[in-house]
Image (cartoon, rainbow, N blue to C red; front, side):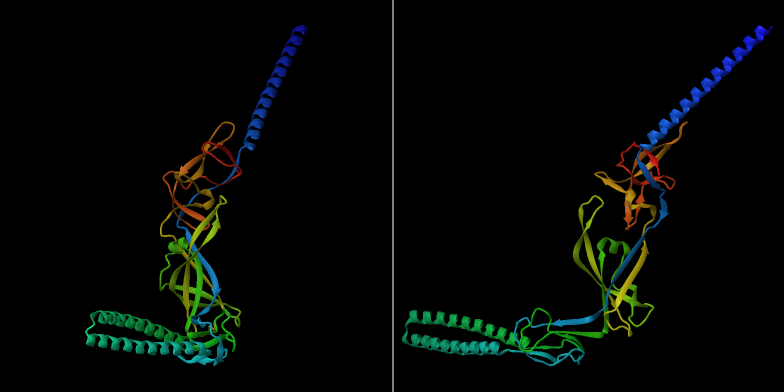
Length: 385
């Protein structure tokens, strides 16, 4: 009896030992399986994702500059003559047509007198040839008459050339012997020096503040098109007045949109890209302005179209067009697996932060990859940040 109980007890202990060993084996197997999966997942590229939103993107124009008089004239003498008299000083109020600076025109006047004398000489020579023509006709010498007739025509051509030369000299003398005010205004700067010729800078600068001030803003042509800014459009201009702590808000009007030199920009791939530029000129009129103030413009408009919005970093390009990488999630017994899928999109609009896309395969619940620790391809496994 005791022997049978002892054997039964031994069998129970062996079964328990086997169960314990089997349980430890299964536990170790699960541990190493999970550990292996963890190590494998740690080696996968790490990605940062976002979900698309629906709506329109915001286009924003921000620019600043110095207010300059709308009517400003930089006057100089292109003839390069020396200054003989300066009739104004900085701050003087002048009327249209009023002389500002006089120049030494003696050399040009002597040249004009010489050309007038040459004209009189040519007229006398023409009269002599005409007398020869009359004499040859009287003598009946046909050959001499023909030669004299041709000589008369030549002399008349020379007279025409000389008269045009004299008219040009007279116009040059009238235009360059002095500088006159082109409009009513104020002399803001005088660079002319008596006894010296112009040194590259304008001899006189004058303005008319009553016509208002201008603000010039360089803008990317694509942004200008997205904003839809047109001539005569009203914009709010923030002006920093030196005497006021608070900025002053005045209304401005777009009066000119002009082409300008393109700028170069570095793309995300490190390549230099040429960006078309426009200059937007805004007219500002306010009795409290004096010119020289710092002015700012902030203009915000939504895009005309709506769609799915993703970050610019999420949109990529290849030969076939634009695309984004989205996450496909596969559920498993040992955890979820995340697969990269390429989705073709059409970029409808963009700003400096977001891109408005249209796609039948991208939805608001999708996870879109915006950043990755390694370059990605279709079908790659990744881990989420």
